[in-house]
Length: 194
Image 1 (tube, rainbow, N blue to C red):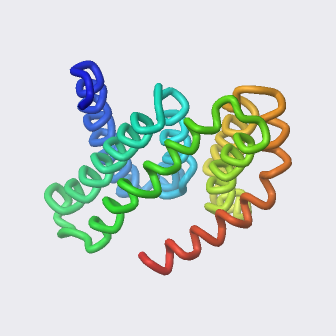
Image 2: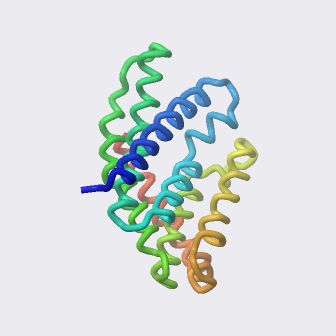
């Protein structure tokens, strides 16, 4: 059973997730490509999930906080689209909720687990950064220049700032190319499901 303080943190995370979902949908509909890109490409969401995991005191807490944030964000995104913008409810909502409870929670827990581990921890950070690079904005930087810069900055934070030691940072940089290939395969599979 979680403490009252942790329940408050989870509630705040749900509120923050809902606000992020509404902001992401508003960005999608803004007409500004760079704003829509921020919510559509994985960089912002990977960074948020990584920070949640990094700052959590334990693996279960990391998983729960990330899952709740992302589920609230997903619900708010699709609810805003359906109820405020009149687009109707989207069939992808259940898939994203399942991903919130599984993949998102697993990434946050893995990031928490990576703390204090050099090679294995570096591999986890590289995989998180690989998801960002596999999103593809850097590859098409001429079409999405703002998102490409954001992706590079987020990758830098994930492999050079958040890992807890110089050794972990070095391993993260070393593992980044193969992790990006692995992440690209995972994202391709996800796109087939969606």
